Image (cartoon, rainbow, N blue to C red):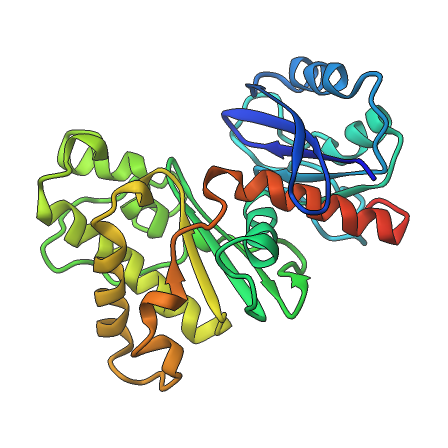
Length: 295
């Protein structure tokens, strides 16, 4: 059985062919430009290839409501040319096989739950902290979707008492993404995060905001495993600080043992590294194959 995968990011696409165990036999990466140019590269990748199904994990916002007239569309994205683009339909025409469709972070959550750091857990929340902040989840085997998909980067968090930065989000200013994504770090401190490794105040502030957010997700979703990925999380000093701030934010209210004495085993780094998304797309393809239709 051969499965196709498309991890569609706002900056780059990754296409792959592999199997349900996450083994990849062929992969190609290319920039995300216009839909026409980008889908031409997708077509070239899958040309002369036979796949049983394809899974798409897409940047958003996207329409995941199967009853909607625009199901499968990229919707209100600022990415030039992609707003209101029928992405799922275009891929179905290219591959001629069942296609699974969700967000890139939902796909990553599926990958980590099945083959990565959340194996054995009943639910997984995956959050990427990079140019933006996004979160996806698998709860009791189902992708977390409703009338739309989660937009976890745009929740409000309590401000750090010493932080005067206004925020970087064009919609909400000081939401989580506006305060804690990579561009916010750079604009607040005047340098990229990679140049601020030896500034403890930078990472204490960052951990405060991410700890506030993780505590909120624990209280609302109660996931068994929380995987924090993305470029910002590659700062190794950050995860232990987040553990500390989550404990402080919960203040003993949540009594689950996993969130107290074993917090280091609950809030973790990705087990699949940068392949969480593309692996999840392969697994999404397998789900679509089993259903025998695009989903």
